[in-house]
Length: 128
Image (cartoon, rainbow, N blue to C red; front, top):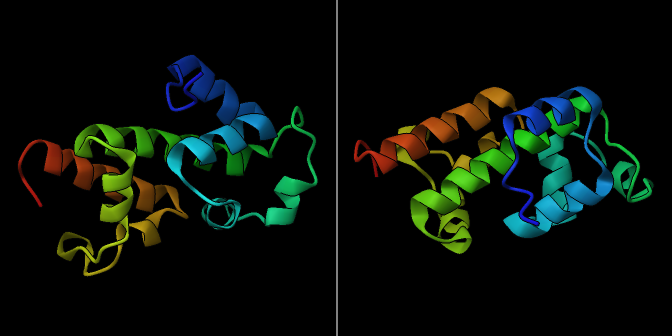
């Protein structure tokens, strides 16, 4: 199952209740994220994730960020044609983002939205 394919209903439920650790780890694998990277974006410790059983839920706040990151990675994969190309783009300084690497924006909802906006601009030919 592709965890990046989350329905709007499941997205809202996950944002309200949290997501299971198993979903979170699957999402990280599909996105090519290490546990350290993921925990920094979610603003929780790696230990908080590791201590959970696979069927236990992550708190709603970090879960909602994880859901938005999954949505972002799906958009990035679609925009660049591969997860590897998208991850490379995330890690290169971007003039449209104030000279910062887009990956540095992934720890806030506002930052994730800015990266999504830039991906949409790229997709429609307004940026590079």
